[in-house]
Image (tube, one colour):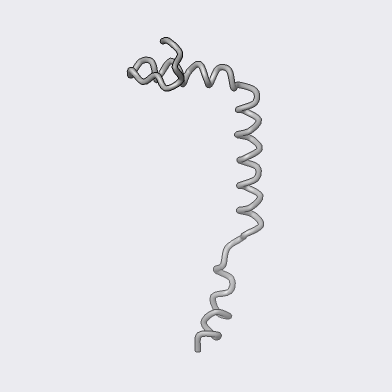
Length: 61
């Protein structure tokens, strides 16, 4: 009974290679953007943390 149900719903399992590809592409895009804009992103984060009064790095705001 269970085996018949698994065979009948076999087409609803999803597209695993597609999800893997999307995940890998997203990771590459994020790594590329981070590598390109690391200094600017760090400055934005530091500025935002200083604005709310959090200074975890030990540097002065």
